[in-house]
Image (cartoon, rainbow, N blue to C red; front, side, top):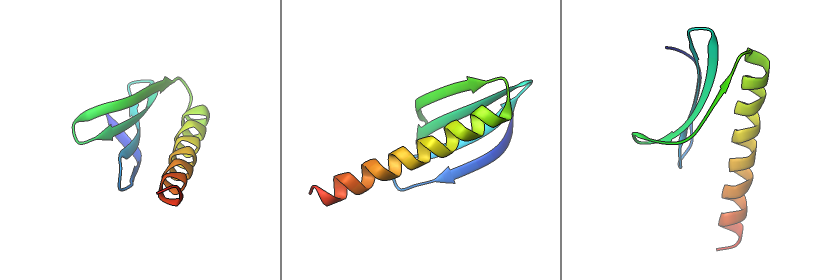
Length: 67
């Protein structure tokens, strides 16, 4: 497994990695995996990574605003 990209937020860690000929995007908190998607190409994997970050950032902001 080779890590390509990793982004840590206050709620989770998002990791894009390459395993053999597949690209995997994992969302983890501690050792628990919340979401895992597998792609055969880097482009859709990178798009999914960015979109997941964007959506979770919006959810965090909405949560903070609604407190």
